[in-house]
Length: 384
Ligand SMILES: *Cc1c(COP(=O)(O)O)cnc(C)c1O
Image 1 (cartoon, rainbow, N blue to C red):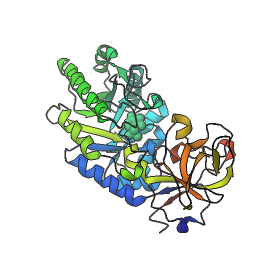
Image 2 (image 1 turned 30 degrees about the vertical axis):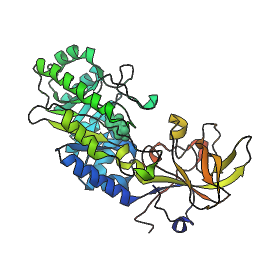
Image 3 (image 1 turned 60 degrees about the vertical axis):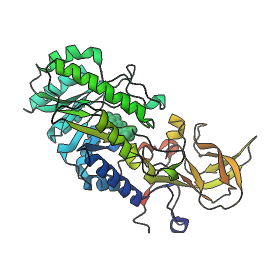
Image 4 (image 1 turned 90 degrees about the vertical axis):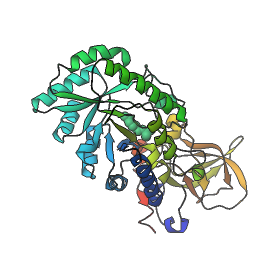
């Protein structure tokens, strides 16, 4: 979201990421008040943005961490997250990564397969420890989002399928260095339709009943993350509707006495607070539409190239009448674009362009392809 004063950033070399820390604070406060109403536990999904300043602001507010690699576990701890509030998911945890998590006594491994359970048990046994685990169950729910970011249908690599459960629970009682504490779900990302979460709740209730019938005690339910943000009109919805989101889980989940509900939110907590600021290098004539060629590219923000994602784009400097442009980067790939047929005030060399809603899955996915430099981040509370 734009809060940026172009005069203040004129001297900064472009492209760069700009974070609106006031908006981030407000968003975090909202997550906190809305989740605490129901006693929900929220873990921030580090993979959305693992910038230390952002990680610290979130950990200072008492949130837990959701990690998907050994280095993320270490990063979470370095940035103030309590190991007792760290959960660790991922289909391919290496032995050294599991060992890191065991050494730091993290709260819970979200296990994604039968062989993984065996490995965690062996490694925990070697350290004379008992690892707490939740089973990541694939609830076979399809959601309306880009197919690269659905995770909860059977053909995805994620989670344990329902038909594997009989075998699994027979195994789990034999594994002495594992303690099953919960069930974990995560159905995908950028989910804007709350119906998908409603379906998830109903499936969780069915699955819980199955476990109760097997006389297996489940202390907690982790419903994952995935709440989407408004990329089309970020100004209209700078903070996602956490109020209805948490209320839905509260009203639909049938919990056992004392059962705790955990969430793993990434995008919805940080997505709207970041922008990519880039400068126009050239305006080039095209056949039907002109190109605004900017100095930022897919190396800084890969979402349009990878997911055909839409980002709102503003020209921060021009006040001229509007025209249409394809806004493209300098990388040697046709997929290197930020927007097609974008309405912008007439754009010229040197104009500042803001690509909005880049706080999640932006800077963390940056690469050095074409031997480019990784770009810097600036924070609203430091350049005022
Ligand atoms: C990525 C991920 C999340 C966070 O997803 P968002 O869509 O950013 O909220 C949560 N849990 C798991 C297991 C993940 O892989």
